[in-house]
Each structure stands twice: as C-alpha cells, then as structure tokens.
Length: 423
Image (cartoon, rainbow, N blue to C red):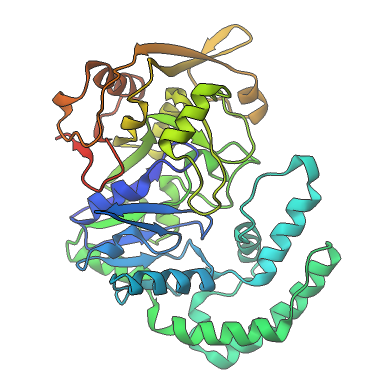
C-alpha cells in the first residue's frame, strides 16, 4: 500500500502524463489535485494520441478510478467535451469521480481573466485566459460555487443567477466582454444535471481506499516553478503544483505520502513570460522545438527551449521532497553534436548553487555549463539503461550527482512503452 505523488520539476510540459500512465497500472486510484483545464496531458497508446485537460490519466485503465480532487477548479464545458471525446473512442468515463468540494469555473471568470490580461499591456503574464486565476480568487473570497452544490438544483440555479448578475457588473467595470446572465443560468443548470452522477465525497473515498491497502497516485498539473508560492512569481499559475499541494488538494495528510516522483525533461521548456537562464534563442533552440514538437497541448503556443538546468532540479528536489526523478524525452537530443547541462549560476561573478528567490536575481544569472559530447545515435524505444549511449548515461549521472536522488525512469520516445525503468 502506498500513496505516490507525481510532480513536474520545471515549468510544465515535462511529460507527466506518460509517467502517470505507466505508474497507473499498479494503482487503483489516480487523483488530480490542483489546477484546471489550462494544463494538457498527452498520452500515446499505440497509434492513438489522447490529450487530456481535466480527466486524470488513469482513465485508460479499467481497474483505475479517476478522481478530480477538491483542489481543482472545474470547467464543465471542457470536462463534458473531454468525456464525450473519450467515450466516442471507446474509453469509459463511468468510473470518474469529481470532488464535491472542487470549485466551478464560469464564463465570468474567463471574461475577467481576459480583461485583466489585456489591461496589463506589455506586462502581460501570459495566462491561458481559461479563467483559472479568477476562479481561485472567488474561492479565496468565499464567493465561489462548489461542485457539490449541483446536487440541490433549485439552490444551485439561484446562486448561479445571483453570482452572474454581480459578476456581469464587475466585468463591465473593468472593460471586459459582458455575457447573457439567463443564458449562463440555462447552460449551467443543464451542466449540473449531467454532472450530478459524477459527484462524490472524494476525501473519504481516498482515505477509505488507503485504509483498505490500495495504491493511490496523485497527479499535479503545471509544475514546481509555476507554483504560486515557489515559482517565478508573478509568472506563475494560481495554485500549488508542488507535492505539498497534493495533500491540500485531495485531503490526504502529508504523512500518508510515501513516494514523490519528479518529472523532468532532458532539456528545459517554458511557455509565456519570465526569466529562463538556460534558454536557447538560436538555431539550437529552434531544433529542440522542431524535434520535441514543443507546442502547448492546450494553447498551441510555441514553447521556449533551453538546456537542462540542474540548479532548478536541486531546488525542486528540496521543495517537493522528491524521492526520485523520471527524465523524459532523452531521444530529442539524439542528433545534437554536444549536449550541455547547467550545473550552477554566476551572479556578479560569484558561482552559486542555490536557486534565486526573486525573478530579478534569476534574470541576472549567467548559467555555468557542463558539456557532454553528443551521441548522434537513436535512443528511441530503448528500454534497457545499459543500451543507452555512454554520453546519454553520463547525462543521467549528472542529474543524479547534482540532485542527490536516483533517476528511476528515462523516457526514450512518445510511445507508451518507450521507457527505461531502473530497479
């Protein structure tokens, strides 16, 4: 019996879904603990690709109960579109449970998101405009509407109407696009009826499963350096993707977490604004984009790319209490003549190994690199660590040396089984 957390260690898009999909086979519950539909998880099964935004990756196993935890903000149009897509492709969502304590996203949240981002002008954060931040603001203001309220249709309708009327004034005041209150009410009354069968007391569901000795997997969206507290603020998300957020976002206590798997690409990417010490703005960066297909699952935006940064990974190891690392997309580096790894920073000529605590200091650092010869051979589909080229093994060794924890998995391609699993 164990509870495992899977967390991104960079700025997201590390390939968490593939690792979660691999681990899910030995777990009875896979629960998402924070974020919303601004995050995309891609799973490749055979010749089929599935892009998930809200549904936990464990949905592909008949033996797994997928859970959307209390820390998630739920956009019902997106959830139902995803459910319909999965069902049309033969993937059952009947086992899905949505926490009664999770908060709902409404059209006014998206209108507020867009208006505020537009007002920032050149200082844009790079939000996905999905309404995530405003939904969390309503949650903190105690003005949110929770999933469990759909079970009382009359009260739900009344509350949505009252909140929509107030929100329309708020949207108008900040210059946003207004909306038809009664249309929103009509739409969400229908959504509520459809959602009702999925609603569950997921906190007790998870505790009961744990006490029965079942294995539980907790998955986060986004990643460590997008965490609202520990990320590169203000260029962050509106929740806590770090492993501590898994306890808050599911109701399982910290002492119940046994294993924390950090996911890292063999290089680094980020979307949107903010400092990026190892960023490549030359042809090598473009090459990483092209080979790694570095475009957002949800937004389609081109990702910024750079070399692997172990200063970040060391910090992620600390704030997440990582027990191991899964290094993904190693095969993307197969054709590079040399591969660099950032192992330290220089600030005003001084070498530092700790991650800066402000974006201003981070923006001023100079990366210190360790350079490996490229292996110039295909690693795609390799499943045995000894079969990896020597330089590829050396890259893994640098990660282990700099973080002090083992690399337990190495991704060698997009396919479901393209993974080195080390005992």
